[in-house]
Image (cartoon, rainbow, N blue to C red):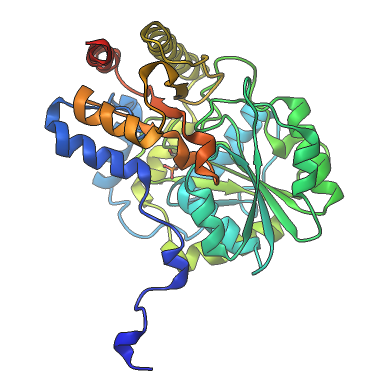
Length: 392
Ligand SMILES: Cc1ncc(COP(=O)(O)O)c(C=O)c1O
């Protein structure tokens, strides 16, 4: 075949499109410039903790500027193990059970590449964080979706069981959840754990919002009976310490799983930023008061935004965790989420994410948009002022 007849890009890459979230960020800049308020992408617009920033600067000045050990600097792995013991009472061997990657994002992809064979199935709960589908495709897995039901984002036990079968290799579970804000209960996690054991598969848990819980508690799958050997627990610095640009995440898993993840990670990125892992040691060691203040501030942001969205006519409930709120917009005369999101960014000046980007079947998200509230109160106040324009 003539070369020009052949597609020069892979079929794999053609199976997914540009991130809708980043597209909304781009549109916000295009239509609004500096005036626009971007509540689409989940990054804070307030400073990271001073002690953590100082530690990063000091590490660079002290010439921690070369490759760290590929699976993570020893001091940072030790800090991950100490923090896991401190918060969840789970013993982790930092030498054999921790892999440090470039953000939870790379950690999830490296984990899937490490455990999935072509033709394996991966269970994903919808609405889901938009990376999981492309991650599964890149790893060669077939996703099996289970939809959570409103109100309350309920998990139907029969629907969940029906998604498991002989080809299931893993379930990807994100709690606290983006975009729904759901914090999975201990009973739900036990149900998932029992299916993982019955079908001899893994739980890959994305716990990046583990410290952002307003109602209920974060239950780590790793600590449930029978799950220590079959859980890959993923977290990172991005959300708990407001450093999404640093790209430091990690996986905790039993040694055979960790061995496989480390090999993939080595060939994908070699290692995560060395000086930022040093700063991560300081971050993970912050006192309890840091975390309670973080939650207090996020709860204030959540309560403010949700109350105003409800007053303005959006249909939404306060999320139990993470920093997003999914809203119905039935009152505004639009019946398409993409059209409504474009209206908000172009005419009102606030960027949000169309709900359809969180579902395998876009119609399930057609009547929703997602707001993020990881912003200074003054940013949220400005967003509310702009949103008043909906009624003008
Ligand atoms: C559920 C979830 N996982 C992972 C990430 C990205 O984490 P990281 O910055 O550590 O790659 C995000 C960011 O929005 C997220 O919402």
